[in-house]
View (spheres, rainbow, N blue to C red):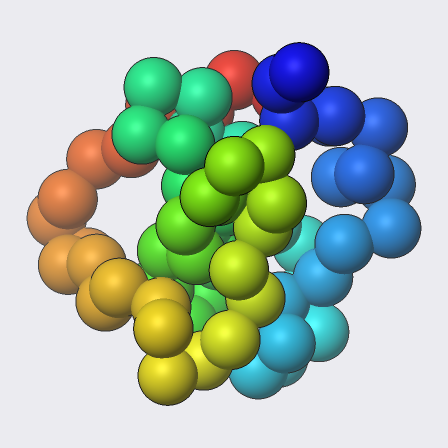
Length: 65
């Protein structure tokens, strides 16, 4: 079973409530506004701020939604 991209319609960043982008290669959900990457573990998004990875402004992410 893979991450269901239909969830992207209802998921939001837990910090700013903004849009998340799906990075299929890294298996992460990205909030560009807060520069946070939330991991997807066993097809379940881990939307916890303290578990998120900070991303640099210059760091590029491939988006595949």
